[in-house]
Image (cartoon, rainbow, N blue to C red; front, top):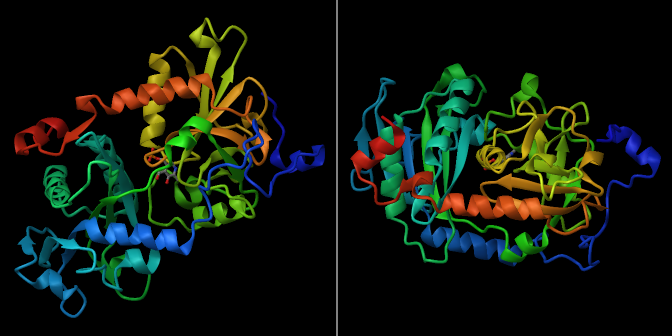
Length: 400
Ligand SMILES: Cc1ncc(COP(=O)(O)O)c(C=O)c1O
């Protein structure tokens, strides 16, 4: 692999930004994924507002906790270890909001999980709970439930949502430091607050998987390392990623971009992990000649789709690497494929990076194979928790 730092790439005539999103292979303009109109943004919101329900759990602090949470018709008291009464309930989104003094709202002092519901199952729930507990532990936020109780509340909430068969549905599970004064001091917070928003989600259109999408690249806004904000903590503080997305997609219709770490090596995309596949001579006959490479786990979120793809790649006989020295230039050129992974993106083929073609500019064979394998995996019953599960099945699934 070529080892040329990004800073030198412009010097060798490497143009970082392109003004329009073209399919590098065909020259066609890509489907309108980016630049959503206000009208389409409003439509999405109206759809969410109609169907979504949220499980909300908060300490009771008079004058601050929303009154609807104090109303016995809407909520009930729950056990608490924090010495302050706590209540919870399931609400429509216009019935309740987070109090303005919640430190998620004031400071992004919270962590979350985005979990897909597919084939009547909560997909990889165990793995998502594991990561949530780890993130909360790193932040020193105590969850108000154990995994069993929380899962039962999630199932109860999901069952109250009237999904259409064609809906893709999703849980946004958030736990915040809780209620505090206007200072940042976590020691002055009463907490935690937890909410689980169960809603529909718009995923990428089918054509995007068939044709692939282009990625931009953020040059100045970098992914901080563990000494600033450990990327393995799935925190609610996404401002850095938002700024990177603005920079990396500026002037194009791109919807995702590559983020680099502070040393200029590829870290991940703003809400997805990145993979490059190098196909060495003879790869068609010998699976071990297929090298599936993703940036080192210290630079990026330990994505659950990333982990699944690494496992499936090994099962398929490919060699896998978690690289601390992957450069932007390694993503483009011949004999390679790039794809990104995430709960929302799934496995998305990438056809160009910063206007430079990946492979032949079309989704590659290995990407297609992995997309096929993960689709099959998702349909396996043991890959998630059945929405109709009773307490015993939940216990078995969680191993508690
Ligand atoms: C920064 C970042 N990287 C990667 C991912 C993909 O992770 P997962 O596969 O667990 O959804 C996400 C998902 O939200 C993310 O926010």
